[in-house]
Image (cartoon, rainbow, N blue to C red):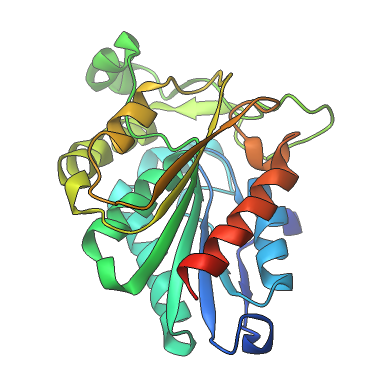
Length: 255
């Protein structure tokens, strides 16, 4: 069986001659039940601008949906942290660019590894929910392995994040378990933050925005609304805007 190359991890070296003489890294994190395909255009754009890029395939993803029911959130964190370590072997500093659940992992990295990270760019990060159905997860995950999937919430026709057709419930319970650790520690986040939020998002609600922006200690923070994209905005009509504005932000905070 051959693996779709869009599902694979990505690793590229820094080209300091394009980034003001300093080697700078970018850690790129995809979302829950999605894949690196959702972030590949962004990762490739960063690489073209001279940043070293590490885009890991988070455990349980890119294979079959049942695999997400066998991993813990700390495995996602450990994989991301190891990728950050690889960047810092050759780079002076790094930024983290993340989508959805990847945003929760990114915030945990910012909490735990503050001085290693110069900035965060989050797109529709998933750190809380008003959905009452989540209260039933502890019971539901023992009865049902999964429900209908939540991937490809994309307004632009013809785009595919190559995610799972089912929503693995034990895996989703791990996302909620991660929130219980990440959210109380949000005041430890001090890095500059560029926060993109889709006005219409059919996967997460606005509570994540209020949770993050209301609790972090960062003083350099900007929330930018995306009018023409749904949840997977990195593949949607506003993708080019995300690339350009994140590049400006990264160049500024790493200068």
